[in-house]
Length: 146
Image (cartoon, rainbow, N blue to C red):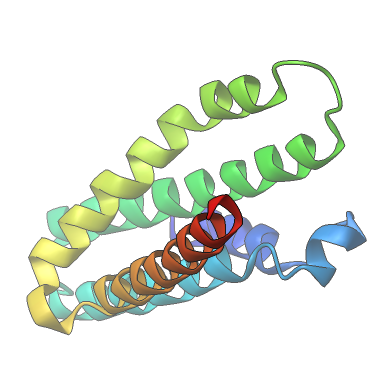
C-alpha cells in the first residue's frame, strides 16, 4: 500500500501538462499538503511499527489521501480546459468524495499526532493566506463601490 501511495504522490508532484496552471503555481498548495501528510504518515508508521493492524490502517489512509489529492489535481486540470456551461458544477460533483477523504484522513492524522502534526501546521498556514487574500479582495471591492 505504501508503494501505491507513492505513485499518487508522484502524480501530484509532477508538472502539469497544462503549462498555464504551472505558471500560476496552481498546484503549490496540493504539493505542500502531500509533503506534509507524507511526513506525518512516516512519523506515525515509525510510532506504530510494532502494531501491524495500525500499520495497515495508516498505509490505507496514506494511500487514500494521496489518491484523493491526485484526483483533485486531475479534476482541476480538466476544469482548466472545460469551456462548457456547468464546468464548476461538474468539478464540484467530481471532487466531492475526494475532498471528504482528504478532510477525514487529515483529521485522523491530526488527532493521532496532536501538536506534532505537520499537516495541521500547513493547513493553518494555507487558511491564513486565504483569509488575507479574501480581506484584500473585500477591501478592493469596497473601494470600487464607494
